Image 1 (cartoon, rainbow, N blue to C red):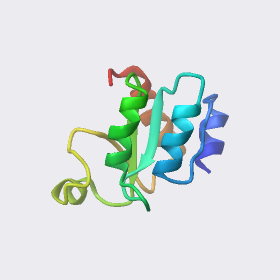
Image 2 (cartoon, helix red, strand yellow):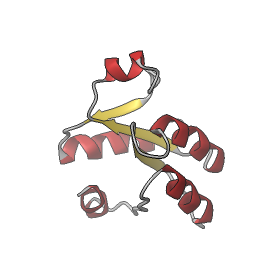
Image 3 (cartoon, rainbow, N blue to C red):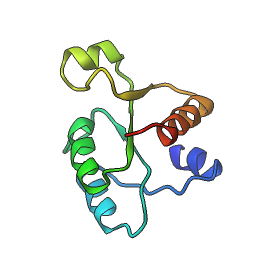
Image 4 (cartoon, one colour):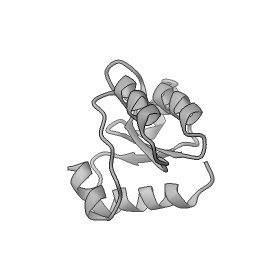
Amino acid sequence: MLHRILAGAGHEVLIAADGPAALTLASAHPGRIDVLLTDVVMPHMLGKDLAERFRQLCPGASVLFMSGYARPALASQGTLDPEVTLVEKPFSKNQLLTAVQQCLTMDP
């Protein structure tokens, strides 16, 4: 569903099954990656850890987190820093595209 929404809005989308696969994909991708969209809680690697390692590979990229957990719960557990960009599930197509656009226009 996310791929359809983002590709339909004109974004090139790369898909990875999990954090380690995303890092492998990012390191092998010949072009620029502008935004990483990741869930906060995933198997094999938390989104926060993925974002840190991803930024080493793609220092100019922004990171957009998504989660079904409320922001205060994530921050209190240390799973997510309070200042990150987060779109909370369930979100609409417009909410997702707005969040991606904000990431594209902000300094990482």
